[in-house]
Length: 282
Length: 165
Image (tube, rainbow over all chains, first blue to last red; front, side):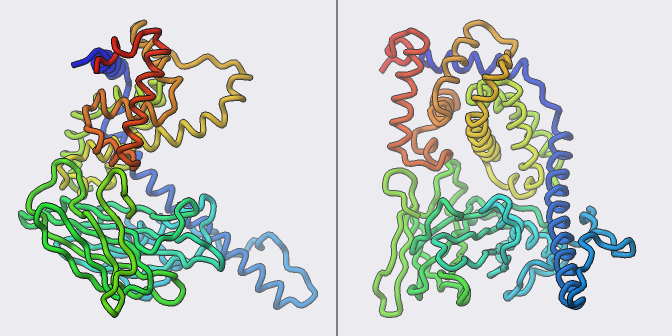
């Protein structure tokens, strides 16, 4: 142990002794509050949007008469924040791929699509599209995205992986600081299901690609995937695939090493390196 | 939430360790408490998924590190106003040696602090530090080298004394 390590450890130990943390119950409560706050903020935005539409419609139907800017006293009350136990409001989500089943499925969609607002802080009005979802190995995965505006060189998309109870990990990808590439890869691993470990790789790929090959370390066979068609509103398509891990990965090193996209003639149209360090390009 | 008992065990076992690590990154005990608690809050709502992983502590640490970096950027923007108001810095109840080290660390960019803490305190190899911070391994090596040199200078000690090669 060198002197720097010794000093850092001593300082950390002292801080840990003097630090005051309110306990696991407080963390759990804070997590729930955070989720409710997000729900409340969305409900407020929807209520304001509804009010704006109502006022706009009143103005149009009223000819030269200006409608009052404030709602009359008989107007419906503003939408309440969803209460725990009430189904999430997905009225602002477009669902070309349908919905995962049940209230849990709605909650997953809600969780993932709320992440899209994080690409541009303060911008919650962009269309939210659930592009695709699927289920395997006891998990449900989802991909959501906001169609880019004309001239926009980046894409806002989000993904999530949930267990049957609706708990899971989700997050946004892309945003103004991440120019669109021909190929991108994300994923999770160490998903435990029936005594085996699975990894999930997902990302977007140029529309020129008709196939995506994912290469792995540790002897995992390459994965051949067909892109999910996202439609004309999106400049790219998406891909998703599960792979079996030979073992639990204790080093948090991604098994995926390289991703290659091919066109219908079998020619490579994009490639990226997934391993961390110099050369990482996924 | 399923598995809340397990979450409590996880929290109890990891919170002090993470608090110490984040204290060295933030340089402020209250700030460290805040980011660690927020990271655990986020973990709590994902626990039934996170518990399947063998290193949920690494996940919480990564979230806390990101939060610390975000807050450091905001604080930097507010720094001028705070200096004009003349607010005293937070003074944790720790030893003089620790205070000197923390004060020296606070003069480094937050990325250098994160790299030093993750590599020299947590003990992560350079590749894992790179994964945690989502930067190339070469950048981590550079951050470590520059960070150690700057830290030694701030402490008024030769780098070889602090970190023998």
